[in-house]
Length: 109
Image (tube, rainbow, N blue to C red; front, side, top):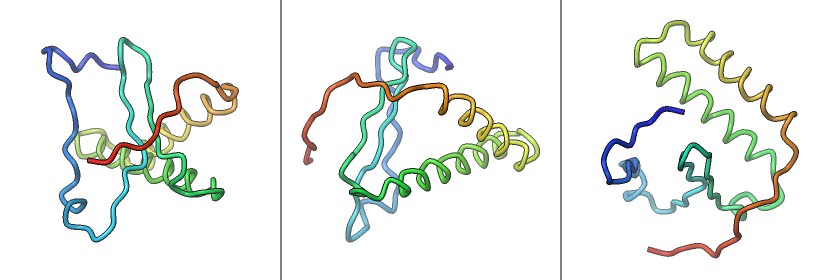
């Protein structure tokens, strides 16, 4: 993972412009790299028992990553999608479900 944090301030992404204007919106996932480790919080109740929706979400994120890389000068969007899929396939079956972290209630702003 790259070291994008040169200052003391945290690098947070902006909320997409469509979200404040939406009639309904819910945050699903937030991911950070902190001291070299991946740290994730997610709204585990978002899809209820329909876990396949999380799979669809991960696939759409993969497409966004490939498209972003393409816009940043990488070539061959299908090759980029294949690279994302390769990373997913290599990591997912090898890692057993890690039970660590904390369960917290949702925060309302």
